Image (cartoon, rainbow, N blue to C red; front, top):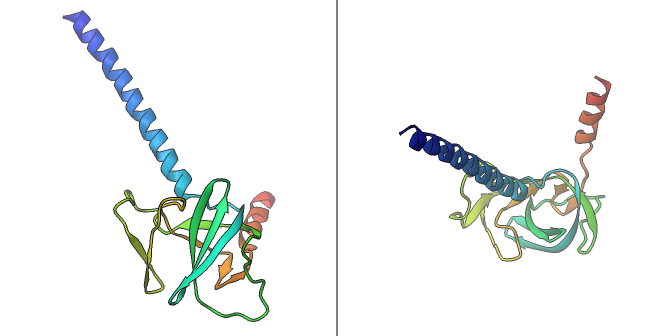
Length: 151
């Protein structure tokens, strides 16, 4: 009986370890698809629009993301151009969603923007560096970093 209990305990410990490892792996996959939010060079692949929203497709490595930006017109700005590379800080609009596979679209600026899939990551992103079709790199993050270094 003790031997049977011993084997059961060992099996239980290994099973728990495998479950924890698979959860970590699954979480890292989810995190990598949602948190592309540190500044990286993205190539602008396409720019489209739907009513009051610009749809900006950006590629980094082998991932294409769909970024939404409210249609606004600014004078004297650096316009986003297809084929150009930009350091972007992007954030998922679905980052707090546990299962996004059942979601077909996301409401942004009173417009339902469809998720695509295929080559495009099944998610929708916003970018603090875009105002309409203007590229306005944020200096707030660098200011915060400098303050942390001084402290």
